[in-house]
Length: 255
Length: 255
Image (cartoon, rainbow over all chains, first blue to last red; front, side):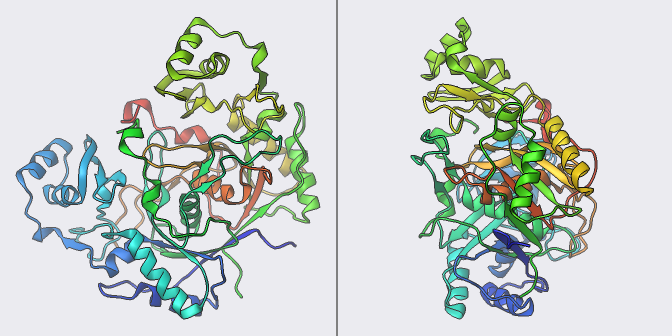
């Protein structure tokens, strides 16, 4: 039985995260429990939810006063005006609106449903608590990477992931909102393919492929596993930013 | 050292595929060379290129006579009129057009660049040969699955993948255009999350996650590995179709 090219390991037992928690330390503890050690070239994929919780990106809707704009948009889309208020605060612009749905460009430049403001999987069974995205997911990834590397003396990459819907295709996939220790895009332009024909445009969203692969393990329900270790994946090293994957507005035909 | 939850294996040594080749047999030969045996629950991800080649979906542009519509659209987009002619034949409609770029809805209902008509990585170093998508990728997946199961007595899933660009995000990821032995979408709606809050809309594009994960292994250049075995991934069993992932036009805000 040969070794796999790539192996994905879940890290079970990560506790409910509180504001102020040290995510890198939670991951180190989980690695130890799972009897795993980090190796050079490993990728640690962290769902943004635990990063957002650790960074205190939690709001109770009872504390949110909706603006007149939020009230009007909530009426048009049949959503909670307080939820819409939080979405607007997190957004540069609203890209599309429809009953029950707002597609927004976040302050970071990500285009996604509800500007990433999530009402599910947040502590508080009344459903009145919302979680926003980290203020700077690339910075969050860098901080977690620094914590992991200081403790393990390894050169690894860290990805902060979120679950996104897509244009044209049903169902969600995980994508990368923050990276550290890697370039998010692998540039294969100019390399010959097996027939000697030079590939003209082949830039692969490696960070998104890694986030999607981690989604196979992490699930989204009761058995939620917010951290996945990926071993053996080839990725371009460097000081990249997930925001390098944002398509410039002037080159985007779908806004 | 614990076992990984999910393992990805490349199958090296698959030869250049010719029209009429039996893809299932090529995969069985590659599994034997790699000393791998299929297990129940395995997923075999096959890039569409070798399926298209086996099914004879290859055209030489010298044999293509562009229509007046293709000539006009080629002039508008600065593309080869013969390439545009093949794209139009493969399309229900053109969704967006721009210099060098056509986003089309294929006859199967997929929205992608150039209707999936590919000029790179096709036999013929003159760059004059194009490859089209399989006529029915779900049927292609079913045929490959039947061939693999008959030889191995295992219950597996097969995915036919392609490399797509996305709205809003740079870089490509692999997605599923055909599936067999699985439902492409895992429906987690109604399951409580860890806080007891019931998830309202959580349908995960499992087939696309699997295709994206396989993209980590398969690469796209000289070392191209067109078949990847994924072991340990949870997916919904059943007689699904990748086309179940197509967002209905009337519910799609990005056409």
